[in-house]
Amino acid sequence: MKDKAATVPGLRVVVVDDEADIRLGLDRLVSALGASVSQAANGNEALAALEKEEADLVLTDLNMPGLSGEALLASVKRRWPRAVVVVLTGYGTIPVAVACLQAGAAHFLTKPFDNDEIQDLVSRLGRQILAARRDREARDGAGGPLLVAEDPRMRRVLELVDRVAPSPVPVLIEGESGTGKELVARAIHARSAVSDRPFLAVNAAALPDTLLESELFGHKRGAFTGAERDRAGLFAEARGGTVFLDEIASMSLAFQAKLLRVLQEKVVRPLGSSADVPVDFRLVSATNRDLEEAIRIGTFRDDLYYRLRVVTVHVPALRERPEDIGPLARHFLARAVATCVGPEAPVPELSSEAIDALRAHAWPGNVRELENAVQRAVVVCRGRRILPHHLGLGEAAWEADAGAHADDYEARKRQVLERFQREFLQRALERSGGNVSRAAEACGLTRAALQRLLQKLGIDRTDFVAD
Image (cartoon, rainbow, N blue to C red; front, side):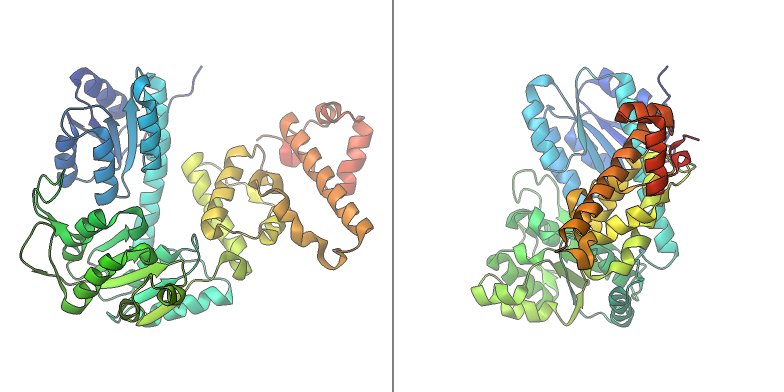
């Protein structure tokens, strides 16, 4: 019998479809999970509903009169970036649905859809959304987002954040992609004198100039196709709070000039308007590129650069802060279990071998890659301990193991062989649920031979017995 989908009380959902019976059916399926549901017959009705009350999840048809599901997705992701969008589509529009995934949709389902599939998806996405909301509420109550800082390099970053936060000066955050620059920006806001006012974030690389200008400066009705009502931009909506502008190096020179004027004059001119609007905000910006090099080659304005970098905060790459890897992994592990399995589920142990593998990995994707690796481990692990192969790091995790014997063929061969044996036997024990006889048979070994290997490698078969 199929397990019943977990309920998601407190989840806010908008169902968008021009067919009333489909809206009603989706409403009943989602409401049965404990979520609150609003219905909309088209994209414009959905936007109006979202303006009255933000939603966590939007289920939208693609082909609708007026504002299409594709256009609705783009508008929702611009204005409510935390909202999760699921696209419902007929078989003939699957290529469009795939394009929607590339534009930020979380999932798409083909019609006619299966009721259990709808409930399972809403339950899974809902638990992730609610867990993220609890994280935000917890860190707001604790004075800002969680920034793990066991490593001395990261502790120095937090010390600088504490010093700069009370001042309204612009801050430029530098660092590779995935290092947590937005978390640092949120920490600056949370420790500032305007922490009770909005924190508004936008990724400059995700929007072309016209949409970025509309997002930040606002627009008047009719300023461009789809501008069906006046809208204030983020600089005005901040109302004295913080605007976080990420990936600023991707802005065109023309837009840089407009942004410089805003910073100098503290006024914006909405698209389609002939009048300036005064604004009050603190700007925190971020980049993963070398802006001084961009100035040298003529792709970034030096006068804007000096406006933005009154204070510079450099966030080190994860490989440069090894003492944070274990604490971050344990934090992500607890969060992934709560999100993917359930808030009451036991958290598996992060084995010493897994910690070694994590510390040996180069982490080109930084903290974001670490979080993904831990989430994968939670999904694939069947036992009570996270082991190296659960993390999916591959051969890269072995590179540091050679140590002083990197050029010693025999020593390196022994290390590689032992790694292979350990992972091979651990996988066999996982599949057998800790049953040595079945694992030995699967490996083509006698029970006695397998037990000798387990003893030699220090592998405890009880670690693989399901509770």
